[in-house]
Length: 151
Length: 393
Image (cartoon, chains in turn brown, orange):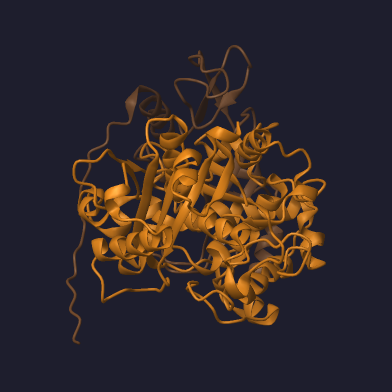
């Protein structure tokens, strides 16, 4: 028999409040081009991105700590497939342990030729030093900065 | 303990495919329920409570789609709960049904659900939305990218290669070719996998699960009811769950508790279910395993976490040796696993159902010979919420 269908699109706009901790983090990125984490007084661990409480100790974090701009790659991937609502491929992104931080922060890796995935994977190997680069015009958001190979 | 046991008495599964244009969402749930009730040789009137297995609504495109499922499971005037732990939903639902019976409040409980991921066709858009809106949503995160990064770390720690990943896909496709309910049943070669296009380095197209549609259902009952009604059953002897931090970046960096290369909380969950089942040496005592692994690389850390090998990373050489093939030491994913069929809301239920069929000796062409004790697992969230079970004949 003839089987019919209907197309439906979900398109919902949310106006998310970021809360005090993320708001402070993003205003420093916007105004100082600097990244800060939050220190847990009990473990001394600096959490980046900053959180109001430590998921290890469950205690409130107590202090803002400037981290980076240098760091080392902890994880990466290069995306070659097109996904709806995501950037045009190829692109590389992953996680970086910024100097002075204890947890890794996500961001794009830019300035790397992704044409040959094997060559690019060698350049992005875990442990590779990177530098945070800030955009000249900053809105106070994650995409205001990215990581580039150091030197 | 023996008088308190909970048994599986009925199993129903669709033949999973990309799309089921012949069936609405509740039709698919109903299909699995009818199969499970038939298998249990029971009428729906015998069911005292229902646990409904449904992961993110956006995957089926129906808000709180469990409402549409109430009629399909015969839920009128009965206790009805929806469970959602992402990819782990199916095993969490079986666990919740288990708790219903083990508590002594109910003798017969149905768990059921379905998914139509093929109608969404855009699961990574849905899965991008699982990341927090404050920090990580602007990044191109999805489950493929998240687990690609786990794979990159696993490669560095344990020496897994892209060919090793391909071996998992080749094994599971071979198994799926023997399972009439599997979605991807075409046998592939290492070369096929290696020459398939990159999705997210190091994951290629043939290292990925499909977007499947279909339903699953299981009937659980108390030992007393099983005995009184002279039913055939296999037994859930171990149940575990464990969660870990949401923050992927906390699973790397300086001395993380839960290393992102591994499946730390999956290991903790297996510890709990092994302890409950009295298993002290899983590598010797487990006969068959259905481990949730939607991408080829993740089967390795799941085998490690289940302690089917001596130490993390040993899964790679052992798989190369054929130990996890049907006919090998401990067949892993003899159904073809999540890599060949992923109807997300019921994928982890299918892991339990398939292990139950194995220890029952009813797995047909993909039967692991002589299996009497098996394990199942499910992973959900951003590699964050894990469920495990031990099933025995």
